[in-house]
Amino acid sequence: MPINRHPALIKLSQDHHEFLVAAQNIRWLMDGDERATNAGDVVESLLKFWNQGGELHLREEEEVAYPFYLQHVPLAKKEIDALKTDHMWLRDKFEELTHMPHFENTTPLLRSLGEYMVSHIRYEEQVIYEKIQDTLDESALEELAAKSAAFRQEHRGEEPVHETKVKLPTTGLLTLKLDD
Image 1: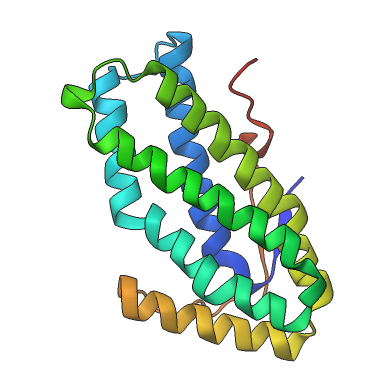
Image 2 (image 1 turned 30 degrees about the horizontal axis):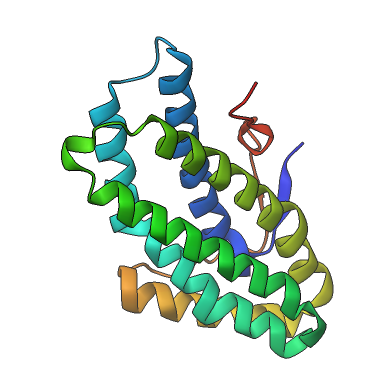
């Protein structure tokens, strides 16, 4: 079943899809799936994604989406603090992966990164983003969309989204489990 996303959250949800694709590549590698590339290629692709968009995604949430949501729902602070802790963990693990000599012995780190990304994305998509859409009125969502677009234009050179509402496909990635 598709997830309905307000334009204020479309780009962030699309980023989540990219995180889930990276997690799927890790899973294929761990499972020895024929679709998997070698460990070095998986790590290179993962780090490229992180450096070109993954880290900026976390910053956009921390600098734009979360603070904006907290202005309207201050009681969500515990949830948002937990997500920021997740972000710190992800940053630490990506930093660790970056500095592994020749990406040796990456299996445990890759497995935990993949599992953590899936768990974190699921929670944001199914709980936090839903709460943001359900709690904020249209005017507030439009303001969030403008702030998000300004962040993306400044940091990514992206143009704003103009759709009114978009259904994102749930190609099974939100239900991805790395331990199946």
